[in-house]
Image (tube, rainbow over all chains, first blue to last red; front, side):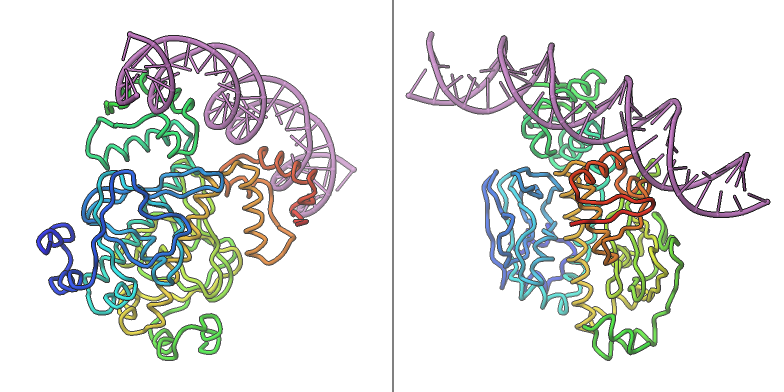
Length: 208
Length: 208
DNA sequence: CGACCTATGTGACAATTGTTACTGTTTGCG
DNA sequence: CGCAAACAGTAACAATTGTCACATAGGTCG
């Protein structure tokens, strides 16, 4: 485990890794599992070691809006932010693949800020990255129409899974953009006419 | 100045306030001034001591979308986040009133995290508050139509300036919601019919 | 007063998005 | 096989939002 930690979080000092090994626990989730629910109490900061998650904001009427992906080597900023006040989660996170997480109790999360320079830097870096990601999301919905948002969505998905072959149903996309399947079908058709994508059953081929 | 600092930032320890006095400078801006531009280099973390600012995200086509207000006793999270890497600003900030700011050089911003418990807590608190505010903004544009967004906007403005009499033109609202004046006029008329507001020239009276 | 500027109101229409309804196609499974 | 469930396409229409054109009203200033 030490080696894999070292590989996934290359900036961590040896002492920090030692501390993590001694104090943190590991949890695993299956693809599709909900890892964190809106309103749930947060007791741990979560570091991702394996698999991917999607982080959603939930609307009052059951909508779930995709905000960003989390990859191995990253951490859930919300879990850090809430942790400092032992608050409830403002977001919902879902496993894309099988996921493995390191759970750091919030008392240690704070303690390590003082003790481990590399932890401090990691936390600050995480805040920054997530904040910037959130700003990009605001951009995409504040300034762009659905066609551009769809392109943005597909690109992000492609980046996240590292493939141009996206295993997505129209319904799934619609849900995560908080619109309806018909709208997505329509826009995808237009994208196909513009030769940006090629549509197949259950997957979409990005041509760009 | 010590007294006013103590009053505006009541959580700060005396040593921290002393450090601020010895090391930070004060800058003032007039109402309407742009305090920070998108793309501008950030060298300081900014604490607000007097007046209000609005923080915007700018679109490629010149749109400016209002994200949140900053009040005395608060700090610009973006300036903290960017500071840690001496990055350029992702946002634009504008003075609403005459504004007075404390500029903390970024080297101290980091140093104090280790030395002053109350500074550390303030910074973490600031991250949290801004993150949550940003999540609310995402909500309002991801899940709500323009009529509800307008109500949300008016309510926030009213909260920020502590009055039900909003000195706003339709054009100003439209710009900050990234839509057109006509749309705002229409929706305000409907709100007036529902007796939520009373419209006057150059100001809007909130009735709720 | 008259010229001019800003703010607002409004009607007509276009474009985008949301909704309903129905079709066909593929897949998995008893 | 036959059937149900999930996925996809599409037409028709409604609702919302964006755009253009123009009217009106109030305020400022020479």
